[in-house]
Image (tube, rainbow, N blue to C red; front, side, top):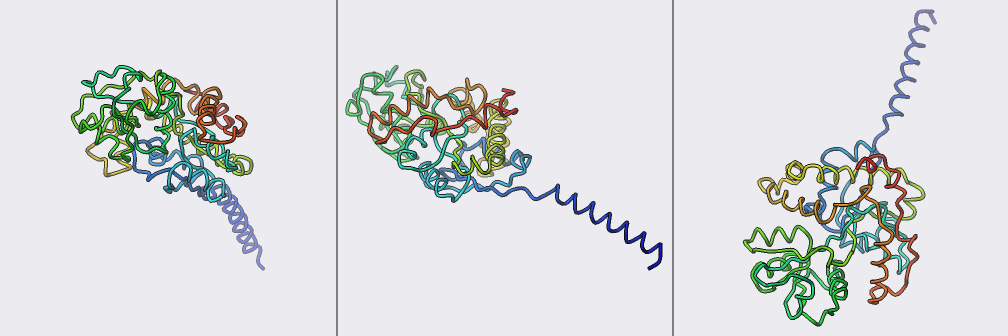
Amino acid sequence: MSTSFAKTLAKASLFTLALGGALTTQAAPQEVTYLLPAPPNSPAFAPWIIAQHKGYYAEQDLKVTFIAAKGGVDVAKQLGAGNALVGGAIGDTPIIVRANGVPVKAVAVLGASGLTMIATASDANIGSIRDLKGKTLTVMSYSDTTYYALLASLRKAGLGKTDLDVQAAGPAGVWQLFSAGKSQAMAGVPDWVVNAEESGLDIQLLPQNEVFESMAQAILASEAAIEKQPQVVAGVVKATLQGMRDIIADPRQAAVTFAEAVPSYQGKEATLEKIFRLYVEHVYAGQQPLGRIDPQRLESVRQFYVSEGIVTRETPLDELYTNQFVDHDAVAAKQ
């Protein structure tokens, strides 16, 4: 072998080693399935959709695929069975499923307040929860979290569910019947409040301090994911909270971003902005740092679920949540 050829081969070998090292450091992002409780085209899921659209998950070396499950409880069951690492539900969900042995925890909650709002027709003269007595009110279903929050709100005001006519009308009927004047009030999420308002109904919201302190949307993870793949859980939490932060910082721009990501909402940016402003004012506000789960709030919700017989076993509080991915998250701490 000639000396010049040997030198050329040596250089080529060194280049191959260097290239191999570079390829190693630029490994493909980890693929993650994120289970949502419903199809991922709803404004309620804007923090996740915006985080995906703006590349926040990619910045965490994650390639996230959203798959719709059949509600929050189903999400939790799938996580517990090992079919996915992370998913979304209401923060109340671990209370329900842990009582049945499903090993999941909430690892972040998107807002300091609950999702449930109680809207009334302005001409119905309903200024408080107590004024609902004898009235008709619509909810999505009798097994939805907004219904449980309504029951707790009634009890807080000294009323029971038989003191008014509560009708389960489905996710569209809940606001459509209200808009048509077939009910005087509605318990629902911000999306439905704006739907009712844009139908032409003059509405008002009952004071938030009268509504039971249920939980906002949460990120859930299996105990196995928390223990064995904490970097994945941390990355999902960090990226999603950044999407939430964008909404808080500029609801109008967030509406534009969401419409870019979900083309069916193009031309509806003004409606999206109204929805996002309701989330910012009534759900997201007052949380320090973003994503943190309040143990006292979770405890009051747990006590209600047990007292109402919704769950039969009182799960220890520390089995329901962890703030380890939020309290020490540099992005969340900026808020």
